[in-house]
Image (cartoon, rainbow, N blue to C red; front, side, top):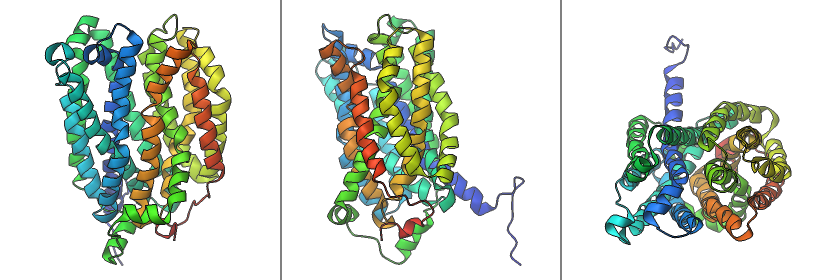
Length: 438
């Protein structure tokens, strides 16, 4: 009889190694979303320091333009890391991506402002954001693929939800750090040096993530593919040639997942503080409370998606966002803390179903040999067009229309596009991932 040693909690070494690998696979997302959240929260300061202008909206739009520029590189990053992940392995791709994210993040905290080096300041900032965009194009997708591939078929929704859980965790940390900095430092100190500290602190997250990823295991499906030498020489070209409609389907499916998320949980504090009149007090605190609630709700929703089906949850949630978008924007426009908090909590409650269900849904759309590449192309195409640009578009809509609730219409359009894609999605719950798409 084979004896399997277990620790005090009753977990075999294999189970413990799998769980450690799952944590390692998602830890890079904490850094990725922490940095992007911090950049979004400090966009007004960055706009002032790097893009001086007489108009606050002009400076803010330029800052969000740099935010969006990083996303323009995501399709390229998706192709690079998709090729690496489908040929060399998920582990290698995730190790490289976290380093490529950490170095530019720290460098952003060191770049002198426009008053010190003139035009070179915004140019360097843009260059660093482009490098980050390449990295992000592989990090989140690699985590999606990896977490769902190592999961049991009946727990794929829960394991996949850990990917978005880590993303929300990064945003919560970024929001909490920004809130603390705002409370403990004067406005003068923040403009002078305080805004740099959160970017420099990202190195600690990256160091921990890289250490964790040294002990990662490859998912069984990919190891089997590698062992039988069935790895494609060019997985990116393979999926483009044979599955273009599936890439387009994935791109439409994540419109709300990407664009809506950045609108409601990254751009939202800027909206409440700089556009709503009177400004909503403690906007960053609201965002921190809401993201903390999402940390609790996402894994619960992920577990629920394994029971009732991910398609049902996606359809209902996309429709729900389309219905409540405008009323909740109007409710937030009163400039009252309680109303703004309640509105964002309702958004979060619905959005958690989308965030938790999406990773496994995308993984089930592509076979193992091109999964990394297929998800990367579809997801990053959408994030480049409507994800990173969401704060920019929303700010522009308010500036040109004078209607501070106008971004709600943009959110409704995104919800309807994803709703149609969700309705057309074929449920694959319980099917072995190495059989998907064959």
